[in-house]
Each structure stands twice: as C-alpha cells, then as structure tokens.
Image 1 (cartoon, rainbow, N blue to C red):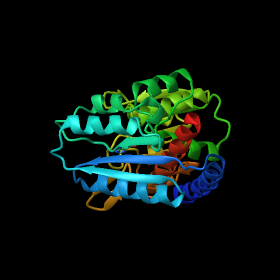
Image 2: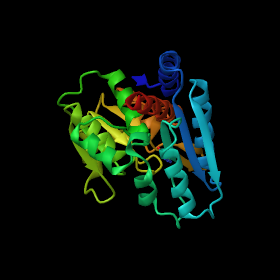
Image 3: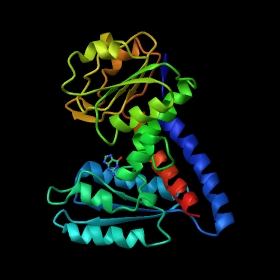
Image 4: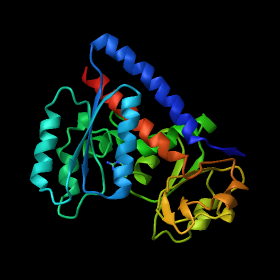
Length: 280
Ligand code: GUN
C-alpha cells in the first residue's frame, strides 16, 4: 500500500520549476508573471490565493493578486482582464472561482486570452485538450495525472472511473487518461449504480464534493484512488473517499489534506511557466 505524499511530490516539482525559472531568467532576462484576480472575501478562496501567491514567489515568478469586493461590477473585472491580456509582463491570468452571482463566469473565462489561461478553462483550451493539441491543462487534473503516473507509468488499457463531471476536474481528467489509452467512464449524480462502476476501476478519481462517499467495498483490490474532495465536516477536513476503509484495499491512495491540493498549486506554477515559454 502506498500513501501518496502530495506535499513531497509538489515540493520536488517546485524545486524543478525553480531551477527552470532561473534558467529562463538567464536566457530572456525576465521571469514569468502570474496575475490572480480574487473577488470577495470567501475564506477558502482567500486561503487558496494566499497559498498560490506564496508558492509563486518561492519559485521566483513575478506574482500579483488583484482584489475586488464582491460588489464589483462585471465590467470592471472584464476591463482588468483586458489590461492583463495586453500586459507583456503577465504570462498567466487566473480568476479565482466561485464568482459572485451577478458576474457571468462564462464571460469572464472567455475574456482571458487562451494563451494566458493558466486554469485551462477557456473553451479554446478545453478543445485543445480534447483534441490532443498543445494548450493549458487544468491544474488539479494535471496534478492528479502526475501523481498517477508516478505510481504506474504504463496506464494502457487500464479502466479509469471519474466520479464527478465538472469542467475543472472530471471532464479534463477523463481527457488526460484517455490520452494515456485508459478506458474511461465519467460518472455523476444520475449514474445508476455508482458502486459497481467504481468496483471495476483500476483507477478511481473522486471529485464530487460529498464527504467520504467512496467506501472500501467500492474499490477493487490494488486500485489507485485519487481523492480531489475537500469537505469541511464536524470531524474536520475530509475527502470524497472514506480514507480508513479505502486504505485497506487500494494499491495507492491520496490523503486529504496533503494529497492533490499541493500538486494543484505546483501545477499552476508549471502552467504559468509553460505559457511564458510558448509566448517567447
Ligand atoms: N477554485 C477552486 N479551484 C479552482 C481552480 O483550480 N481554479 C480557479 N480559478 N478557481 C478555483
């Protein structure tokens, strides 16, 4: 049984990225820049953004956080994105989600230049990923993918089950695993027998936001289980996977916290560097 250490993997990735940034600095005499837009004062978003900024500085990126109150007009945000699109010192733009209700998420995402879309959420990048073309890949699926590949470098023919179909996670993860020649199933809240779908999987990626949904008897012996969930409960933070039960059957499992989360942030930095390289 392998307890996947996301903190350690992310640290190694950040160290590689730090080296890469210093090489880019020598070559181009400038460093990649990441601009994050944060709207409102939701605690989880504030924490994510603070961690993103800290990690960006640590690897030597130029980073800035642009904060707006949750009453900000949509127009102000769109104009800011336009300004960042045209700013040659900005390599990557991320608008932290969720957004206040009066702001149209689709409009905001589509305003970001696809070449600076470090979240990989712009329809152009979604299309690139599903076509197998070059482009930004959403940070969390990319992080999960790197963790899975560390456990098993040959995924050909493996059966992979996504639990959850969000743009940010399930759908993008499915595309990445399909490119690795997995047979991929995307399940969701209307799936008839979720347990029996999971039981067939060599790889399960859970991203539904339901605390400890995935039980030990849902998992095949020696499966790889990746838990993207972060749910606040009376007993503290838990994932979408029943950790103690699944630990007994899986070949490898990510803990919550300390699994996927740190990799997401490291992959954001990786995506920012990739955007910089493609634009130079
Ligand atoms: N909120 C939670 N996760 C994410 C993410 O990966 N990107 C953005 N932009 N917002 C998020």
